[in-house]
Image 1 (spheres, rainbow, N blue to C red):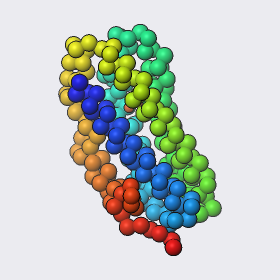
Image 2: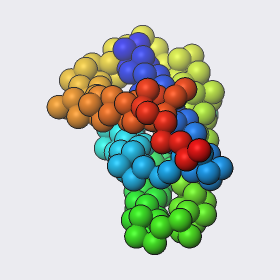
Image 3: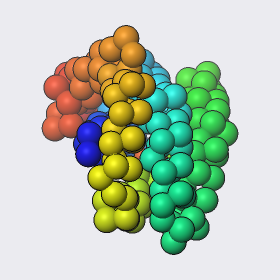
Length: 193
Ligand SMILES: [Fe+2]
Ligand SMILES: [Fe+2]
């Protein structure tokens, strides 16, 4: 089940950046960190590009298609997860717009940016959690070996590991780790006090 391992890996990497993003928001809100707009932009790029461009299309095109064929009971769940994927582009635009506004206006716009960002984070967590706790267990028990052979072959053929076709997302992930303050990253702490 190569495909399952790839999906888990991508969820883990995405989860790490989502968590780091929440930590950075906490630090700015509580007055511990000055906003680092390069870091915020890098994190937003990661948490939107990886799902929208790499991860969700693979789920939609291979795993979900096969599950619809083989597991009728999964239809309702798949409808909801596909709706989340479709909603992704709209949520991404809102989050990017909120960052541009925050950077232009400054501290007075932080609460609005934070509210949009927290909404995005919550929706992403909810989506990944449903896949980890409901979708993947259902796939594991409901699909047969030959189904997995087809899905794995498709994942292999369309190899887009979480690093991205040219490795750009691996580089972006490393950059984020280098910028995020400890304990979530190894960056220098942009502490105010
Ligand atoms: Fe998904
Ligand atoms: Fe997923």
